[in-house]
Length: 206
Image (cartoon, rainbow, N blue to C red):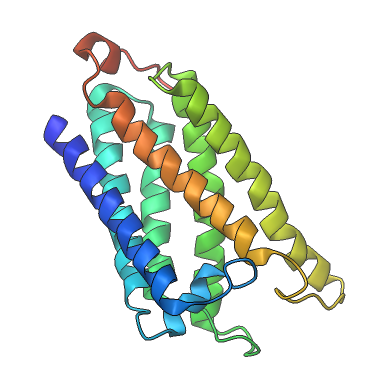
């Protein structure tokens, strides 16, 4: 199982590096520009590359957790997050000002699923008494709180109130969700790496 965890950490790191390079190269305003907009930059190919790496890392962590005796819900949530990452990368969002297309709709709702399931998985892992359980709990709570801030503008627009990303820190709140969720995934892998076998295989059936 150590090989799974080392591979997971490596792919998560590769995905984080690709995302960092994309941000540095694009030069967009991270406070207001959402991550999806980076797909339209010259180095936009790094976005699906990064998301795919995160997806692979999540699958590897899920398999390691399954072998360690984690509950089915925890494993399923991580796999759902991985599938959502693939969909987000495969179906780009629409350019700003363009009506919502099928691709944009898939992208949006896959992102919402991803944003929702990882904090829940993190809370389940914290209950399972893994190492770094307190950190997992904090990161998951922050991710859920930031998710509320991400969703609020969409609800406001449903009621016909014009609100653009320039009016709110949409980019910041989205990045808080992404960073904390990737952090949850990385901590899940690190918590099992090097842990005594009796602790790893004693995971609660969350």
